[in-house]
Image (cartoon, rainbow, N blue to C red; front, side, top):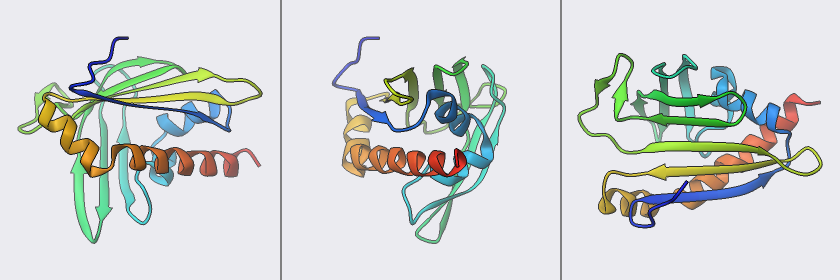
Length: 156
């Protein structure tokens, strides 16, 4: 996959958790709620229909405000790849002001680890810049740390 540095942001890290468990965390609503936004913010609701065209809807509490993000899956490769966007909601209803399309890749690493790559594709240079300034790298890094912490709690 070719990235466009003008509109794409990418984050890769090796996670100290097996790919199957990382996938389970990313594909199950009750697990998403445990890691998907940097603390102290939190996911208060998550509704997933894990199929192309299926919903990926989340509600967040950020600084006392409730934010809803409805989206759909564009691609699902079991255990390996998720592509979702807020450009549409279920039923392919276009969003008035979409933010990004996310591509999350999961690969087996050595010794039960996962090579984890998150890519955010944006409609414009400005949207990419805004996302980077919002803290894309720190945010996705924190989420990755929270994901590992949570995954380890499940494997005990």
